Image (cartoon, rainbow, N blue to C red; front, side, top):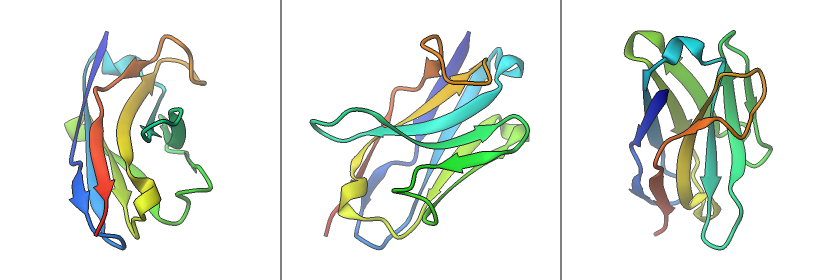
Length: 119
């Protein structure tokens, strides 16, 4: 089992920045990739970023150039640095961990952290 806990959400003005954290515990040696997803009210959950165990990253077009995913192996934590935030970035942000090279229905999820971008 893997447990994920997100933190760092909050209210920020347009153009501002936030850094989300996702701390992992449990059988973390089995994790092959981690990622961030988000879900806005009335919308489906969407993928926005991936970081593999080899260090490769991928980003959705909607956040590319503004968001950066990184990790601190010593702290078993991944981060999502979000810059130049827009009102349309408002959503609940979820951390996801997979034991597979691809996302699967058996992946682990955190409880989510709310990000609100508003003036």
